[in-house]
Image (cartoon, rainbow, N blue to C red; front, side, top):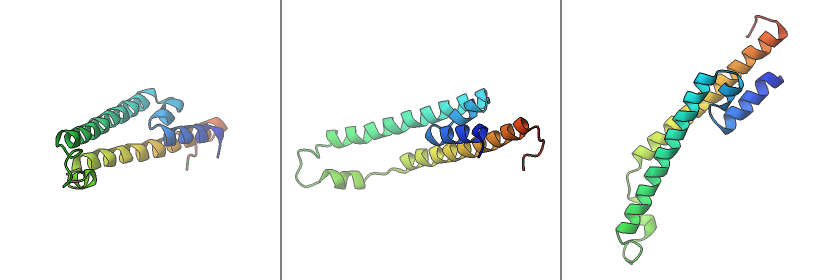
Length: 115
């Protein structure tokens, strides 16, 4: 695997959107980075709300309901959706960084074939 392809893929694996920035697709990279940031903030806020509701419900002082039971009784479809969207963005970022790196390698070789 060539250097022009390896750096974007490794970067995209760690931070979605960074591979696009390295491939000089700045606009696409910034959009992906912003989308991931929004998803992380939303996920953190949802986690905060869950912890806050557990604390406010008095589970910590009530012996009949444990914290685990309270957590397991919750509806977490919203958080699962956020995680699914993040996973799709991450996969898109890695695949797009791979394709962009492959194109950069083909251009570097002076070869028009990117298959």
